[in-house]
Length: 130
Image 1 (cartoon, rainbow, N blue to C red):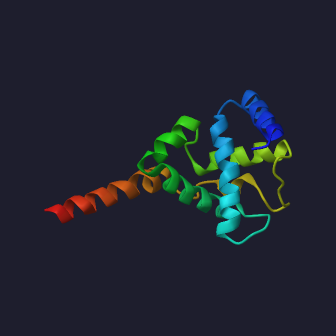
Image 2: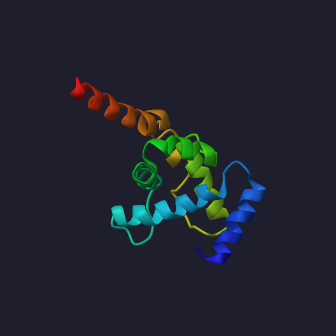
């Protein structure tokens, strides 16, 4: 990441200590991932970004995904919206007029997605063993 972006993220974390620096770095990485996933050169919607985040969390952290998110201070999809809009406020990211925090509200349930998916996989594997 560029040093100036690192400095901005550090400043954001001092001003809004709800989220760890790693969460901001992950959102920026997820933005690039989502742009590739949805074949966009620039803008992705909040819902598209959240889909990219979900996929990247599962790929990167597997069954530890929920724990990593909690460590970073992220408890819901709206937290990702707060992070995005903190980055927009500091001009690291830009937004369109139609983009708003509501785009990130209650998009998916973390427990069901990041914990339930792995429990279901384990239960299926166990049932095949019997």
